[in-house]
Image 1: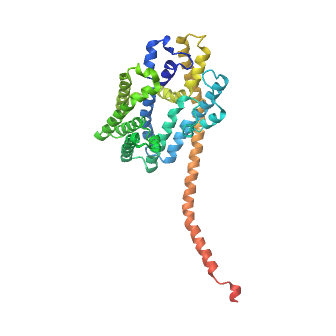
Image 2: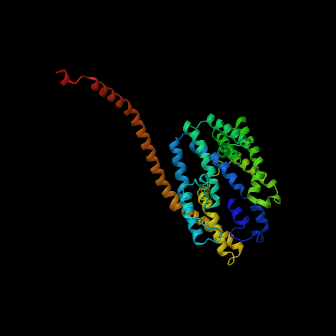
Image 3: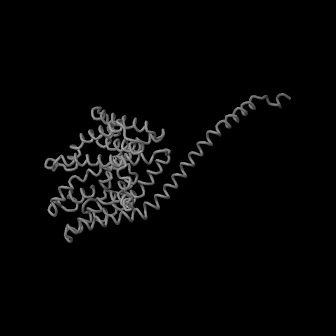
Length: 363
């Protein structure tokens, strides 16, 4: 959905609105930005599932080893492409590129090398907030409490005039994460009126922000776009997640789904400005109807290469290194606790020895 929105709706690379080669596809793709909302909805479900019964160290290890290897190569590759062919956009400078490697550039006010990266900072903030639950231990009650508090924070942030609360409440996107968590609780346990209420409130709050999101993504064209497809798409997304939560799709065990799933992250990271640059370079030599699917296939192949030769080997090494680091930290923490009483006893003995009179003086 996001790829279609970028390649078909945006003029970057094409030089003009690309509706000339397919008006129907163009208007359908105008709503592809909703893939971000779907992604956040899935993320709430998956993160809650993957942290159950795991420690905070395990959570940090899994997220870092999953997110960073593909991201690092995507940042460097995109920067290299934009440096060699700055037709659509330049890579700014290498200080910006190096800062982007942290994935924290938005917090520092540094521009993204690729505009698609903005969602990653939203995701990181969700991880940090949910890490509080993971630190205490993920339980049914704590997840429900987390959903309730985050919902209240999102509502209060709108009128509080507090930049700090607004930054962490992430009000336009938090309803999707919250609903995803509630859907996972339904999946793991069973649907209840309380969980359905959390989903319903999240859905209604999500609807509240959709007009602003439409304007954000379509700009002046938002006045001409229909609003009902946006609301319908979100409704369909919630309905599909409900079906997953209720186990309606448990029988689907198609192996290609796992492969497709592994490609979505590197595809998201790589497709935007690398694709725009290729479109700009080839648009006058290759018909749009051939160029567009050709670039999609190329991006999928490039994503597979990144997954196969970067994500899997580097992610495994990074995961093993972090696991050893946390094991060392736990070991040293335990030895510090046991060493403290021993050191205290030694200190007491030293003080007693110091208080004893000098034998030479006694003599």
